[in-house]
Image (tube, rainbow, N blue to C red; front, top):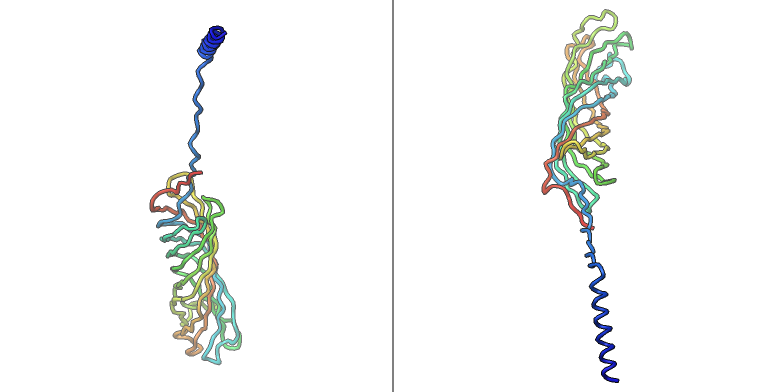
Length: 258
C-alpha cells in the first residue's frame, strides 16, 4: 500500500510539472507613473508694453474775479495712448497672486476747454492736451484656472496737461488769456485679467480698465482781459489698456504630481 501511495504521488507531481511547463510565461504588469501636472508660475518679475483708449472729464469754475462767469462748467477729452509697465508678483495658497507695479503712459488725449466771459457771454476755448501720466500701485488676483488671472489694482497716480492760449469764440483769434501747464495728483482703481499665451514661454496678455480721480487745483489765468482770476479744475480719467507681458519667472513652472 505504501508503495502504491508513493508511486501515485510521484506520478501526480510529474504531471503537474509537465502542465506548468506547457503554460505560457506570465506577462509582468506595467504600472504607469503618476500623472504630472505643469501649471503656470506667476511668481516673478515682468515688463509689459501696449496701448489703449481713454477719456478725461473735468469740472471747472472761475474764482477770485466777480467779472468772470460764475458757475461750474463740464468739459471733456478723449484719445489714444501708449504705455509701458514693470512689476513683480508672488503666487501663494496656491491660487492667489499679489504684486506691485509701476507704469508710464504717453498720452494723446485731448479736448476743448471752455471758459466763460463777463455776464456769461461769448466766452473762449482752448485745445487742452494730456501729455503723459504715471502710476505706482499694488494688485491682488485670483487664478480662475492656472493660465488665467483676474485681479483688482489700486495706487497713486499723476497726470500732466499742457498749457494753452484761449481762442475767442466770436473771432476765432487768439486772446491774451493763457492757461498754464499743470500736474494733477490723485489715486486710481482698476480691474482686469491676464492670460498665459502658448506662443512663447513667459509671454502673457493683459487687459485692464482703470479709473483715476485727481485733486482739484486752482490755476491762475494770466494776461486775461477780465483781469487776474483763477480757474478751479478737478479731473477724472478713465482708460482701457491692453498689453503684452514678458515674465522673468523665478524657478520655472510649478510641477505637481498626483
